[in-house]
Image 1 (cartoon, helix red, strand yellow):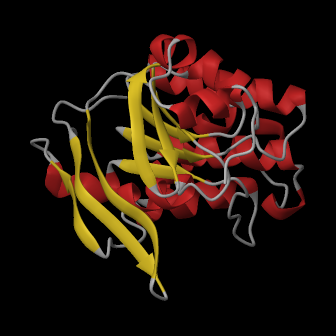
Image 2 (cartoon, rainbow, N blue to C red):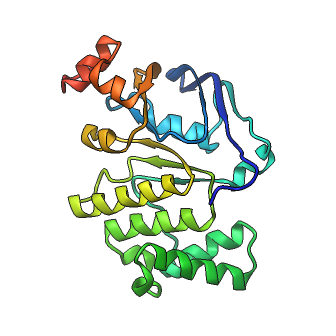
Length: 241
């Protein structure tokens, strides 16, 4: 799935975001390279979802910059995808949802239908192709959202707590799909509130607290020897205010 030319790295420099005079993210800076799965952790309200939306380009920072640095940076808008906690499904069939996304990505009707078929089969959804997407179960909708992302051949995939409302079986299925994306060379940036999930999936951790990035570390280091007292308390399950 990886293209010859990459949109990565992705660099954030002094990124801040405020709403109605309230600072929600402050002076966040890091660079993401291709390869490691980056999981974003932090207590509720830390800014995890906001950070992913800023990286994906859904919103613009109040100050600072979000910049794609790779040789294919001009195609960054079409070489990335995002899957949300509650997938956005159009009022059409499962197959139609994929075809619509692929048409927007520039494929002609015939190519879009063929790739949609392949994506549904790839994620075990072929039997649901004609079902209205909005009547699918939560787990099926999330798999469909991931199939839709896979179909557009992203180089980077943002995942905002994609299993937060799913049962264990559906969570396992989504995690397997995320692992498959990674194996195919897609850069993963994912937020989660589930520490066990982060241990299973993460190569590196970004830890947010009160709108600031206060720790970045390889996953093993973060879980075994967190440097900040906030991260230590978070891993102990203490409430952070």
